[in-house]
Image 1 (cartoon, rainbow, N blue to C red):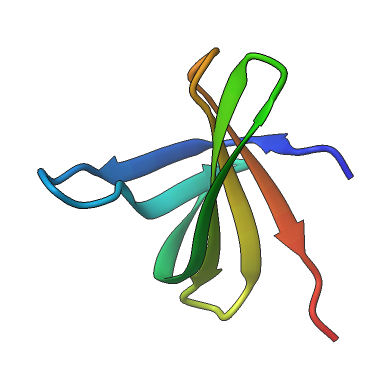
Image 2: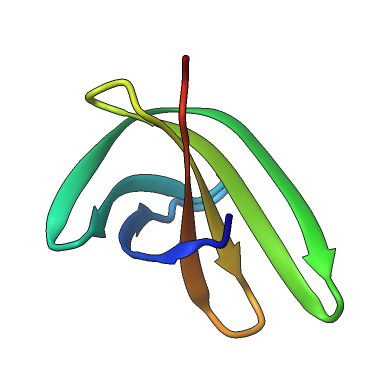
Length: 80
């Protein structure tokens, strides 16, 4: 599945990792209740930052920031 472009709010504090607060998809805002995991990798020249997040309605998603082109993508995960 390819990522969905999203608008996102992130809090940056000195000495800590960036913290995603909410994302907007199809004009609906989803508040992030918690981050369960964070990791980095790269695709070619593009450094990627990943967050596994859970929204207030308990939906699990992966949010990816591409540091090369400054874009955000969302990968929703279905849970059984």
